[in-house]
Image 1 (tube, rainbow, N blue to C red):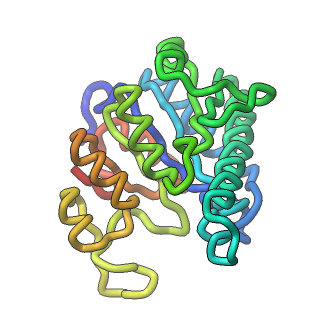
Image 2 (image 1 turned 90 degrees about the vertical axis):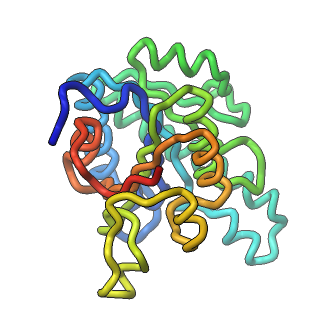
Length: 242
């Protein structure tokens, strides 16, 4: 049952680049951007929840793909960080068109397009009612945007990470539900079980970090309209990792 007021006051919404893509899996879908922006605006306006976003860049480039083709791994990862900035700017545009003030903060210096990430400044933006979009991952190669989401969530003292999935997957399953029709969804699962069972929730570094910080992760279907609000209102949506 929903509760009075939101169950969390500050959250980090983790989005993959692919969730923002066209049906081909590449580029950007204006419809998806507008839907996400409208739901975030609703959560901000009606529930008074601080929302920060960490976005991936897989709809433009994945560092692992470049490394697999023989590219220097660090160079490929830096290219992936730049791809996340492109997605962050697109999200910012969608939010601003929906009349939601927002700021893009990057772990890489890009003064022409975004602010350099500074923890206290990010918190101040949130306190002023702005949505903060974190781009550029951690600013270091070899770390995923999952790890960046966990790190930023701890730094800004978020209450939870909301990991939005796409392609119809609505939580954590015993197996890949697209390949195994007998797979069942967990309502709740522990961090250690995620690690021991090799479940693809977030990378192991991020899961371990969240476990150490007692930071819950909710895996849910981002593209089902209303899910973000339902989560914040305390309704059972997706899978809770805690």
